[in-house]
Length: 377
Length: 101
Image 1 (tube, chains in turn purple, brown):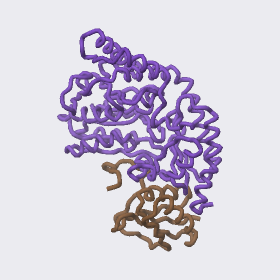
Image 2 (cartoon, chains in turn brown, green):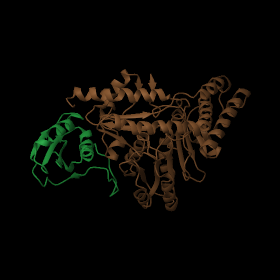
Image 3 (cartoon, one colour):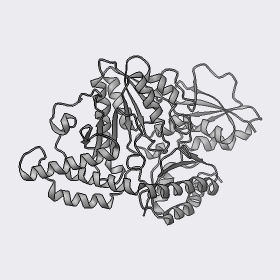
Image 4 (cartoon, chains in turn yellow, blue):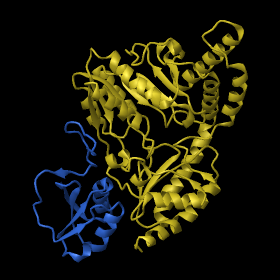
């Protein structure tokens, strides 16, 4: 089986596996207690925090670990809105944020706040001028922008957005889930969120960093863990593994990112050459190194995934028939691109060139057969 | 409500418009794809667009949310013109496409 769904989750990095196994023995005790085993767990937690902070460009005391990237986003969005309540209740996001951001925005609206969605162009890039205009509106409490899109790989103009936010005195939450460990974190964030399993750490570890001076108040009941930002007992072994994966990943990225990006370029070039009536989606240049998305006209997404699975490829799609909601991906809709017959290829660390060759070899016939079954020749 | 809010007058160039008023021009052909899932409505459109004279309008009736995005995207890829999409009283849309060649 060739695994081409790294954007859903990256396989555990070997460095994370080693760190996890060591930390299960060394870091199981309660880091909030004062005896020897507890202090060891606490040292491991704080050492990991220091490493993650350094690699993401934050101070250690700005960084908290959550139980997922989604929880980091929920806490980041709702906590900052709560802390900024006196400044206003207006929230600005792009139309292509992760559903965690958009669902937090719905919660904010249900609570009487207002939310505004700024559109994107056909490459999936947010309109920086419209974003700047939106954050400058009186009463804007928070703006949210991802570093890069999780479905199409397009990079967002985060630094431009951050300048506009700074000029308006509005904090910017930057969701770096897809880019952390692969690309440097852009400057100018007030709140930063990320997810360890996207960079090769274990599941169950998110990062919430809140810049000094940013007003934030927990939307949850009082709890003393993680500087009162995240409730519940810390998963120290998983955090240690997440830090080890991020460090290893950052060290490899110059070589591995370039290699994956060249394979993505190859897929972007070859798919429309090999398969008629295909639209390759997203920015061809300002993009993540590992994600490429395309849609095949006259093909049902689910049939495509099923056939690719039979041929030995683990892959995902933004087409509606593959979603539990039976609605097309909000990202593809906002871009105004074809949503049916959609395939997202996302390359994990170490993917072989042979897997990509084989994918390109089997795809044309699979698409042709599915089209033929619908009477399209 | 299936459609994402766009905020006040933002720059959603990519989003197809929904017209409140009725069509300006009577379609030469209406394709009923109600109840059909994408890509079937688009396959029906591609099969039949050449039945109408050049520059005439085909209306596709569809209620799969994917069709609302995908028929205008098909027009862009195939160099036909997406005239407008009109909401139907029973749900779904009448999506008007002008044959360009």
